[in-house]
Length: 235
Image 1 (cartoon, helix red, strand yellow):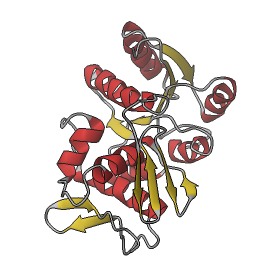
Image 2: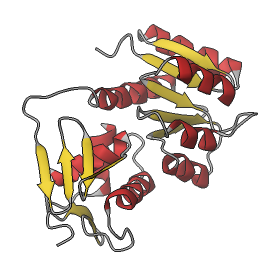
Image 3: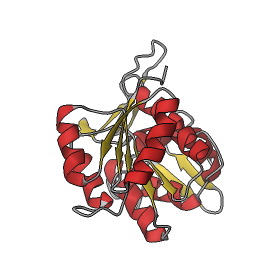
Image 4: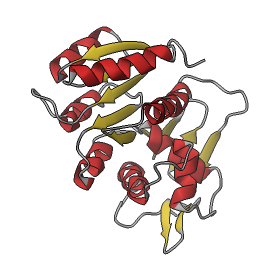
């Protein structure tokens, strides 16, 4: 059940706050509101929400910087909702730790669907599935039950989307996935498919698990086709 989940909406536009809140409350979610980065950090100090909706342009701290700050202690989904449609902003939002991105003006139905999809993934962080197991590769272990990964026996901090992409690839070694296939599995739809979005997350993932991200050994690019997982890794 996703109803009753707590969502923190961070946006300095009170009208946008009211609109988003109305739709989310209608879906059964509990909504907390912050009109600034300072308010958001104060609320996070009191309660950990299940998902954060975050604007980029705010008066006291931009959303990119705020996301970087939040990610130091918070591993739940972060969905950027912003009035800027610049490609660099989209890339920076994902690089800073965002899981998804939607531009204003947005379709409220689309926003709700994105929230639900991201919450479903976030719920897996706490879920313990009996059939889950640990995938073991040279220098890399992936615990599908706890949704964690270790590189050379040291834990690495993976964002939800990073972990989901890694799991999808590692569960089917050497199978080539087109970026749209990965997007469909991770974001659960094709409506807002973007090759760049997948590319940024692959880049982030490589920086965290690859000995040399410039020459990846686990997440391999297959020119013209997509990506595959090399089970032999560092060997």
